[in-house]
Length: 206
Length: 111
Image (cartoon, rainbow over all chains, first blue to last red):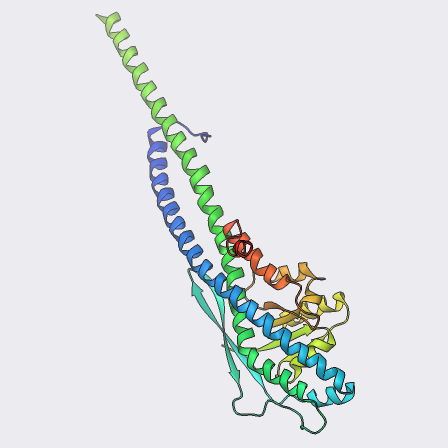
């Protein structure tokens, strides 16, 4: 598929310059894509592992919690948890992986404070168990959140890059090559017809 | 860098467990309510939103809406009814999107 252009020498030089840029761009993007995929695969493996871990632990914690709920009256349970003992804040920074901005989460836990927000008299041991598992899990959950988001953003970027690489490789570069060929042929043809014309005139003049 | 907050959205019985950790909990009853809550939380200073799979499976389009944004990060967690495999399905979706075929999870069948 060649583009419609005037077969002139100027157009030819312009196209030749353009194709050099396109080829270089293609190579760069291809490298970027390879590197992104390499990083992505490492991350996604980590993501999968972490998710399985978190889901497993969380299920255990919630099972304990459900048990606790069945052993205690609803009001007592809600009252026990009403005022949280811990305070969690997070900092979110930006990290740049291959020109993809991904969040980086830092957790600020108040250290040393008691994780149980209630007295031990009215509550069951199952509740203590659930709370202790959960509070240990929070950093892991945040890490999962961070990695999962990173993977999603990188997947987007990989898709975008792949489209660009393919557009250059299969559409733009072949089309330019064809156009260049067309112009060279046309110019050669003009040259030849010019020579024949000159020869003819020379014959007539002589 | 400013301070961000963490939210847990889900059914009342599940989110209550997270209350003692110091994160903000948002019990929701219907998927409409969940959808509104997420929109609201995204506008406020919440960087991480954990949502239970039971709720998440009712509002997939709302979750997809934030997929390509840096913040907030919406993460699916299993509720007190156990996991439905949606959370891991989201990971799978990322792989398929990026690579075209699923090369990470396909192995499980062979083992």
